[in-house]
Image 1 (cartoon, helix red, strand yellow):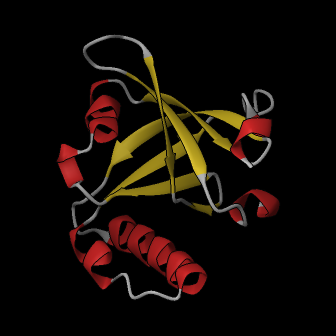
Image 2 (tube, rainbow, N blue to C red):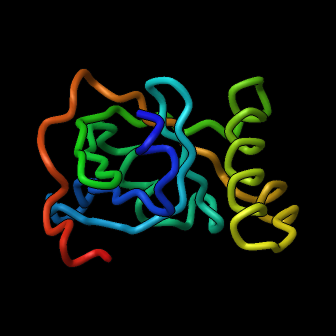
Length: 129
């Protein structure tokens, strides 16, 4: 899993709450143990957040691996919320050289608990380089 944590992006596939179709987004992430953290800069306005709220069963692709996962919207100010913000901001401030305090303060963190072993390679992984 350490190799996966070093990747720049995750690819989240949700089920569209209106269409029932798969919807994929490329997004920054942090990985701790068997949990992947994402943060929506637009909060509840982000369609992927609303899709996860409606149907928490998702697929996450990181590097050349793909997992099934269950999403949980955080944003409650608790310990896991704070940890998600810390992991994400620390990772991407180092990578971008930018201050991301506004994102830390205003973003909405979402946790994804990975379900078991990877289910295969990331679809179209060759096209993402």
